Length: 552
Image (cartoon, rainbow, N blue to C red; front, side, top):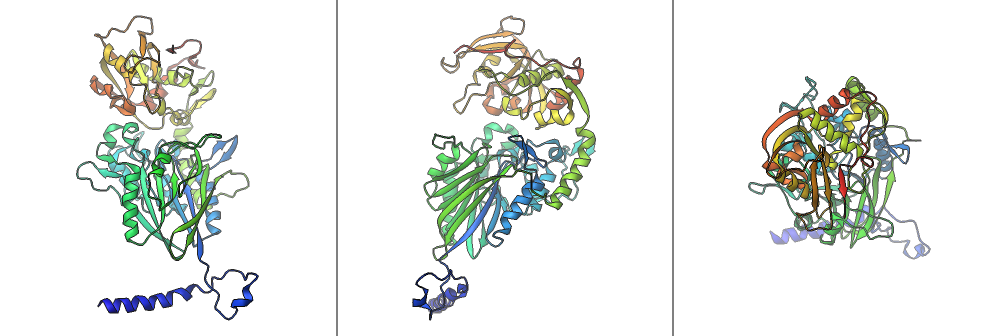
């Protein structure tokens, strides 16, 4: 049997080489020496990877340097034009956060329109970002696999806004480091192999290990997020057994490449620890620009919201099937001069029409802009406004709001529901709970984190902190708004969104609160408060009347 196999393999080897003979290079200066030989196939072939990250349901264009960019109809047009340059050698991939924290036009319909847009854009593969987990395991898997949403959350303003025939993604999602906590099974396939120009390409997915601390704890409770490079290296070994040596990692993990500084961040640290056979890392999560080499691997990231994409060329040796050279451009998808892809433009218009009555509802008029721009102590006018809204809705004298949940600014002038929704797009629940003064101080001490401080926006209290003091002893003054000291032994009603209330962003002391009472959603509270204010309503001014003071 072995002899027969060897004979067959030898015969295959003899027949395989000339099959590519028509792919000859142009004749070089010395071509006349070899004119009696058939021209040899080129030793290398170029493959193209087009990468997108952090689309966040942005079906419509956003501004880049004052110019409209992105929007799926325009992004789709750019991707199609790039693919047309190499139709047989192109892979289109995304690095997660395709959905979640989305504008109203997508989130009101459970991000189904965004998945349908990725189908129309001809994606070949994707991975999970942290935001894919925002609404829990069932909803995350439904968006990939399809079907009607039926968990009770399909209703918006009493109307079922989920498509009963929603198809799901028509391309695979891969995830090598997300497993079920009970039993360790993979949630999704760890890799996929696609063939382009006869070259097998292995594509592995991973998601930032930050995910459990930045997603609602209940939503990520069923999962374990393993070390990124360990997960990748395990799959590289598996791919080697399949004879695959062109390897791409889709990593929802990021970093920053600032002028004059070495690129730094989670994905750069992890890529250093990856098998040298990893050729390309399509990164995401930090909404930033990356285009750099780490050992053998090219690491790229294309900002956010579909306002750019990675256009990567991998030169592959046909014999070894390994990458010998790589280069990338990060292309901004300016809309000017680009014809939107018609099928995608139709999709966007359909949902734009459906959301119009909800989006255009006037809520109030702001006397001045309210922004996320923070003072030196970490307080913003918009943070103050949201915290005030949560205290107002719940009747609690104190409210605390996480800055990472504030996703857009408010302009001065007339505001619509769509404007408010863009600020708080998570549709988090709002709760109030009883906390002691000591617990309240302990929560505020948890603002100071190694990975970066998360200064909670506050209503009903004033605090001072000294960052240079020892951990657990940085809050130097804590009073109610009227200046009365907060009593460690007394009990206070405190409002917060459900993300914070269940220990999100590392604020674990919230879980010790008692008498938790629900009050609808955070965005509804924001709307009610803005409607109830005298119009045009004033914006808090942290510079003039600070609630948070940093003393060191």
